[in-house]
Amino acid sequence: MIDQTLFDPAAISDEIKAQNADIVERLTRLPDVWSVPPAVVRERRAQGLGPFPPMKLSERAKIVTIDGPRGPIPLRIIAPDNPRGAYFHIHGGGWTWGTADEQDPWLDRLAERSGLAVVSVEYRLAPENPYPAGPDDCEAAALWFLREAQGRFGTSRLFIGGESAGAHLSALTILRLRDRHGLKPFRGANLFAGCYDLSLTPSVARWGTEKLILNTRDVRMFADNFCGPDADRRSPDISPLYADLTGLPPALFSIGTRDLLIDDTLFMAARWAREGNATELAVWPGGAHVFIRFESALTEAALSRIDSFIDRL
Image 1 (cartoon, one colour):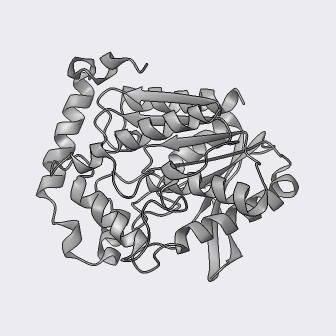
Image 2 (image 1 turned 90 degrees about the horizontal axis):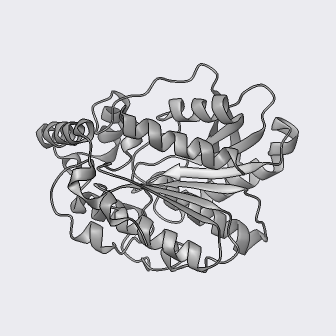
Protein backbone atom coordinates (compact mmCIF):
# COMPACT_ATOMS: atom_id res chain seq x y z
CA MET A 1 0.00 0.00 0.00
CA ILE A 2 0.95 3.64 -0.29
CA ASP A 3 2.85 4.87 2.77
CA GLN A 4 0.23 6.85 4.67
CA THR A 5 2.89 8.86 6.48
CA LEU A 6 3.53 10.74 3.23
CA PHE A 7 0.15 12.42 3.74
CA ASP A 8 0.83 13.44 7.34
CA PRO A 9 1.15 17.26 7.61
CA ALA A 10 4.18 16.60 9.79
CA ALA A 11 5.95 15.22 6.71
CA ILE A 12 5.84 18.62 5.00
CA SER A 13 9.08 20.58 5.29
CA ASP A 14 9.13 24.12 6.64
CA GLU A 15 10.36 25.28 3.23
CA ILE A 16 7.31 23.86 1.46
CA LYS A 17 4.88 25.10 4.12
CA ALA A 18 6.20 28.62 3.64
CA GLN A 19 6.19 28.29 -0.13
CA ASN A 20 2.58 27.10 -0.21
CA ALA A 21 1.45 29.89 2.11
CA ASP A 22 3.15 32.43 -0.15
CA ILE A 23 1.45 30.96 -3.25
CA VAL A 24 -2.00 31.15 -1.67
CA GLU A 25 -1.44 34.69 -0.40
CA ARG A 26 -0.15 35.91 -3.76
CA LEU A 27 -2.82 34.27 -5.91
CA THR A 28 -5.62 35.44 -3.62
CA ARG A 29 -4.57 39.03 -4.37
CA LEU A 30 -4.57 38.58 -8.17
CA PRO A 31 -7.62 39.40 -10.33
CA ASP A 32 -10.01 36.54 -11.06
CA VAL A 33 -8.56 34.76 -14.10
CA TRP A 34 -12.06 33.89 -15.31
CA SER A 35 -13.14 37.55 -15.46
CA VAL A 36 -11.02 38.23 -18.56
CA PRO A 37 -10.59 36.44 -21.92
CA PRO A 38 -8.07 33.58 -22.07
CA ALA A 39 -5.81 35.63 -24.34
CA VAL A 40 -5.33 38.18 -21.56
CA VAL A 41 -4.35 35.48 -19.05
CA ARG A 42 -1.92 34.00 -21.57
CA GLU A 43 -0.27 37.39 -21.96
CA ARG A 44 -0.03 37.82 -18.18
CA ARG A 45 1.54 34.37 -17.82
CA ALA A 46 4.14 35.28 -20.43
CA GLN A 47 5.00 38.33 -18.30
CA GLY A 48 5.39 36.20 -15.17
CA LEU A 49 2.13 37.47 -13.63
CA GLY A 50 0.39 34.09 -13.32
CA PRO A 51 0.68 31.39 -10.66
CA PHE A 52 4.15 30.32 -11.73
CA PRO A 53 7.38 32.31 -11.90
CA PRO A 54 8.81 32.79 -15.41
CA MET A 55 11.54 30.37 -16.45
CA LYS A 56 14.62 31.24 -18.48
CA LEU A 57 14.44 30.46 -22.19
CA SER A 58 16.92 27.96 -23.57
CA GLU A 59 19.62 29.35 -25.81
CA ARG A 60 19.74 26.11 -27.77
CA ALA A 61 16.01 25.90 -28.58
CA LYS A 62 15.02 25.74 -32.23
CA ILE A 63 11.56 25.84 -33.82
CA VAL A 64 10.39 23.46 -36.53
CA THR A 65 6.92 23.82 -38.03
CA ILE A 66 5.06 20.79 -39.34
CA ASP A 67 1.72 20.29 -41.06
CA GLY A 68 -1.11 19.54 -38.66
CA PRO A 69 -4.71 18.40 -39.14
CA ARG A 70 -5.99 22.00 -39.19
CA GLY A 71 -2.88 24.03 -39.93
CA PRO A 72 0.77 24.34 -38.96
CA ILE A 73 2.05 23.02 -35.61
CA PRO A 74 5.22 24.57 -34.14
CA LEU A 75 7.59 22.19 -32.37
CA ARG A 76 10.24 23.45 -29.94
CA ILE A 77 13.39 21.35 -30.09
CA ILE A 78 16.13 21.33 -27.44
CA ALA A 79 18.81 18.78 -28.31
CA PRO A 80 22.31 17.97 -27.07
CA ASP A 81 25.13 16.86 -29.30
CA ASN A 82 24.89 13.11 -29.98
CA PRO A 83 21.57 12.39 -28.21
CA ARG A 84 21.15 9.10 -26.37
CA GLY A 85 17.37 9.24 -26.73
CA ALA A 86 14.49 11.52 -27.62
CA TYR A 87 11.63 12.85 -25.49
CA PHE A 88 8.23 13.99 -26.78
CA HIS A 89 6.99 16.68 -24.40
CA ILE A 90 3.48 18.13 -23.99
CA HIS A 91 3.10 21.28 -21.86
CA GLY A 92 0.41 21.97 -19.28
CA GLY A 93 -1.93 24.90 -18.69
CA GLY A 94 -5.39 23.40 -18.35
CA TRP A 95 -5.70 22.95 -22.14
CA THR A 96 -6.39 26.71 -22.08
CA TRP A 97 -3.08 28.41 -21.28
CA GLY A 98 0.57 27.44 -21.43
CA THR A 99 3.16 27.32 -24.18
CA ALA A 100 5.96 25.05 -25.31
CA ASP A 101 8.59 27.55 -24.12
CA GLU A 102 7.39 27.90 -20.51
CA GLN A 103 9.49 25.08 -19.08
CA ASP A 104 12.80 25.25 -20.96
CA PRO A 105 14.96 24.62 -17.84
CA TRP A 106 13.30 21.20 -17.36
CA LEU A 107 13.84 20.35 -21.01
CA ASP A 108 17.43 21.61 -20.90
CA ARG A 109 17.96 19.38 -17.87
CA LEU A 110 16.71 16.33 -19.80
CA ALA A 111 19.08 17.22 -22.63
CA GLU A 112 22.09 17.78 -20.36
CA ARG A 113 21.66 15.06 -17.73
CA SER A 114 19.92 12.30 -19.68
CA GLY A 115 21.19 13.09 -23.17
CA LEU A 116 17.71 13.44 -24.62
CA ALA A 117 16.66 15.46 -27.65
CA VAL A 118 13.39 17.07 -26.51
CA VAL A 119 10.54 17.99 -28.84
CA SER A 120 7.75 20.05 -27.24
CA VAL A 121 4.51 20.52 -29.17
CA GLU A 122 2.62 23.83 -29.41
CA TYR A 123 -0.88 22.36 -29.68
CA ARG A 124 -4.08 24.34 -30.21
CA LEU A 125 -5.69 25.62 -27.03
CA ALA A 126 -9.28 25.71 -25.76
CA PRO A 127 -11.81 27.25 -25.57
CA GLU A 128 -11.11 28.61 -29.05
CA ASN A 129 -10.17 25.08 -30.15
CA PRO A 130 -11.98 22.52 -27.96
CA TYR A 131 -11.71 18.73 -28.11
CA PRO A 132 -10.49 17.07 -30.27
CA ALA A 133 -8.15 19.86 -31.45
CA GLY A 134 -5.46 19.49 -28.77
CA PRO A 135 -5.29 15.69 -28.87
CA ASP A 136 -5.34 15.75 -32.69
CA ASP A 137 -2.33 18.09 -32.78
CA CYS A 138 -0.44 15.99 -30.24
CA GLU A 139 -1.15 12.82 -32.21
CA ALA A 140 0.06 14.42 -35.46
CA ALA A 141 3.19 15.78 -33.78
CA ALA A 142 3.92 12.41 -32.15
CA LEU A 143 3.71 10.67 -35.52
CA TRP A 144 6.20 13.19 -36.93
CA PHE A 145 8.44 12.58 -33.90
CA LEU A 146 8.39 8.82 -34.50
CA ARG A 147 9.20 9.24 -38.19
CA GLU A 148 11.98 11.76 -37.62
CA ALA A 149 13.71 10.57 -34.44
CA GLN A 150 16.18 8.19 -36.05
CA GLY A 151 17.14 10.40 -38.95
CA ARG A 152 17.18 13.70 -37.07
CA PHE A 153 18.52 12.61 -33.69
CA GLY A 154 20.12 9.23 -34.44
CA THR A 155 18.09 7.31 -31.87
CA SER A 156 15.10 5.01 -31.49
CA ARG A 157 15.16 5.22 -27.66
CA LEU A 158 12.00 7.24 -27.19
CA PHE A 159 10.10 8.71 -24.22
CA ILE A 160 6.98 10.80 -23.71
CA GLY A 161 5.89 13.05 -20.88
CA GLY A 162 4.15 16.17 -19.67
CA GLU A 163 2.78 18.04 -16.70
CA SER A 164 -0.86 18.63 -15.68
CA ALA A 165 -2.88 18.87 -18.91
CA GLY A 166 0.31 17.77 -20.66
CA ALA A 167 0.33 14.51 -18.68
CA HIS A 168 -3.30 13.99 -19.67
CA LEU A 169 -2.52 14.62 -23.34
CA SER A 170 0.53 12.35 -23.10
CA ALA A 171 -1.69 9.51 -21.89
CA LEU A 172 -4.18 10.16 -24.70
CA THR A 173 -1.34 10.23 -27.24
CA ILE A 174 0.01 6.88 -26.03
CA LEU A 175 -3.48 5.40 -26.36
CA ARG A 176 -4.12 6.90 -29.80
CA LEU A 177 -0.82 5.62 -31.16
CA ARG A 178 -1.68 2.13 -29.92
CA ASP A 179 -5.34 2.09 -30.97
CA ARG A 180 -5.24 4.06 -34.25
CA HIS A 181 -1.80 3.17 -35.57
CA GLY A 182 -0.78 -0.07 -33.85
CA LEU A 183 2.29 1.66 -32.38
CA LYS A 184 3.90 1.16 -28.98
CA PRO A 185 7.09 3.18 -29.45
CA PHE A 186 7.98 4.55 -26.01
CA ARG A 187 10.48 3.18 -23.50
CA GLY A 188 8.78 5.14 -20.73
CA ALA A 189 6.22 7.79 -19.84
CA ASN A 190 6.87 10.61 -17.35
CA LEU A 191 3.44 11.75 -16.15
CA PHE A 192 3.49 14.60 -13.64
CA ALA A 193 0.33 15.79 -11.86
CA GLY A 194 -2.05 14.82 -14.63
CA CYS A 195 -5.82 15.25 -14.82
CA TYR A 196 -7.13 11.90 -16.03
CA ASP A 197 -10.85 12.17 -15.25
CA LEU A 198 -12.56 15.27 -16.66
CA SER A 199 -15.77 14.39 -14.81
CA LEU A 200 -13.64 15.22 -11.70
CA THR A 201 -12.20 12.85 -9.14
CA PRO A 202 -13.16 13.23 -5.46
CA SER A 203 -10.02 15.16 -4.52
CA VAL A 204 -10.83 17.79 -7.16
CA ALA A 205 -14.56 17.98 -6.43
CA ARG A 206 -14.00 18.25 -2.67
CA TRP A 207 -11.06 20.67 -2.69
CA GLY A 208 -13.03 23.92 -2.50
CA THR A 209 -11.87 27.49 -3.03
CA GLU A 210 -8.31 27.53 -1.67
CA LYS A 211 -6.09 28.90 -4.44
CA LEU A 212 -3.01 26.71 -4.07
CA ILE A 213 -2.25 27.09 -7.81
CA LEU A 214 -5.68 25.64 -8.68
CA ASN A 215 -9.02 25.15 -6.97
CA THR A 216 -12.17 23.21 -7.81
CA ARG A 217 -13.65 25.99 -9.93
CA ASP A 218 -10.48 26.26 -12.00
CA VAL A 219 -10.45 22.57 -12.93
CA ARG A 220 -14.17 22.68 -13.75
CA MET A 221 -13.61 25.66 -16.03
CA PHE A 222 -10.64 24.02 -17.70
CA ALA A 223 -12.67 20.86 -18.33
CA ASP A 224 -15.55 22.93 -19.71
CA ASN A 225 -13.17 24.71 -22.08
CA PHE A 226 -11.62 21.47 -23.28
CA CYS A 227 -14.80 19.42 -23.62
CA GLY A 228 -17.33 21.97 -24.79
CA PRO A 229 -21.01 21.46 -23.98
CA ASP A 230 -21.68 18.07 -25.56
CA ALA A 231 -18.69 15.77 -25.08
CA ASP A 232 -18.96 12.62 -22.96
CA ARG A 233 -16.47 13.41 -20.22
CA ARG A 234 -15.93 9.74 -19.43
CA SER A 235 -15.09 8.83 -23.01
CA PRO A 236 -11.67 7.12 -22.98
CA ASP A 237 -10.46 9.66 -25.56
CA ILE A 238 -11.26 12.46 -23.10
CA SER A 239 -10.68 10.85 -19.70
CA PRO A 240 -7.96 8.18 -20.05
CA LEU A 241 -8.74 6.84 -16.57
CA TYR A 242 -11.61 4.97 -18.28
CA ALA A 243 -9.55 3.62 -21.18
CA ASP A 244 -8.20 0.14 -21.86
CA LEU A 245 -4.75 0.50 -20.32
CA THR A 246 -3.25 -2.82 -21.35
CA GLY A 247 0.08 -3.00 -23.15
CA LEU A 248 1.39 0.43 -22.20
CA PRO A 249 4.98 1.55 -21.45
CA PRO A 250 6.56 1.81 -18.02
CA ALA A 251 5.37 5.01 -16.36
CA LEU A 252 6.45 7.25 -13.51
CA PHE A 253 3.48 9.02 -11.92
CA SER A 254 4.43 11.98 -9.73
CA ILE A 255 2.18 14.08 -7.48
CA GLY A 256 2.35 16.34 -4.45
CA THR A 257 0.10 15.66 -1.48
CA ARG A 258 -1.22 19.25 -1.60
CA ASP A 259 -2.22 18.97 -5.25
CA LEU A 260 -5.98 18.82 -5.71
CA LEU A 261 -5.43 16.38 -8.60
CA ILE A 262 -3.89 13.78 -6.30
CA ASP A 263 -6.72 11.27 -6.77
CA ASP A 264 -6.19 11.42 -10.54
CA THR A 265 -2.61 10.23 -10.13
CA LEU A 266 -3.37 7.66 -7.42
CA PHE A 267 -6.26 6.19 -9.44
CA MET A 268 -4.42 6.23 -12.77
CA ALA A 269 -1.27 4.68 -11.34
CA ALA A 270 -3.34 1.92 -9.75
CA ARG A 271 -5.11 1.16 -13.03
CA TRP A 272 -1.83 1.31 -14.97
CA ALA A 273 -0.31 -1.26 -12.63
CA ARG A 274 -3.43 -3.45 -12.49
CA GLU A 275 -3.25 -3.87 -16.26
CA GLY A 276 0.25 -5.32 -15.96
CA ASN A 277 2.29 -2.27 -16.91
CA ALA A 278 5.47 -1.37 -15.02
CA THR A 279 4.46 1.49 -12.72
CA GLU A 280 6.30 3.80 -10.36
CA LEU A 281 4.51 6.23 -8.06
CA ALA A 282 6.27 9.21 -6.46
CA VAL A 283 4.22 11.04 -3.81
CA TRP A 284 5.83 14.25 -2.56
CA PRO A 285 4.80 15.60 0.88
CA GLY A 286 3.25 19.05 0.67
CA GLY A 287 3.85 19.54 -3.03
CA ALA A 288 1.35 21.88 -4.70
CA HIS A 289 0.15 21.45 -8.27
CA VAL A 290 3.23 21.15 -10.52
CA PHE A 291 5.41 22.28 -7.61
CA ILE A 292 8.52 21.70 -9.72
CA ARG A 293 7.92 25.18 -11.17
CA PHE A 294 9.24 26.54 -7.84
CA GLU A 295 12.78 26.13 -6.57
CA SER A 296 13.04 23.92 -3.47
CA ALA A 297 14.70 20.80 -2.15
CA LEU A 298 11.46 18.97 -2.95
CA THR A 299 11.67 20.11 -6.58
CA GLU A 300 15.23 18.89 -6.91
CA ALA A 301 14.26 15.52 -5.39
CA ALA A 302 11.33 15.15 -7.80
CA LEU A 303 13.40 16.10 -10.85
CA SER A 304 16.17 13.73 -9.77
CA ARG A 305 13.60 10.92 -9.52
CA ILE A 306 12.57 11.68 -13.10
CA ASP A 307 16.23 11.63 -14.21
CA SER A 308 16.70 8.24 -12.55
CA PHE A 309 13.54 6.79 -14.08
CA ILE A 310 14.62 7.77 -17.60
CA ASP A 311 18.24 6.72 -17.19
CA ARG A 312 17.21 3.19 -16.12
CA LEU A 313 15.18 2.54 -19.31
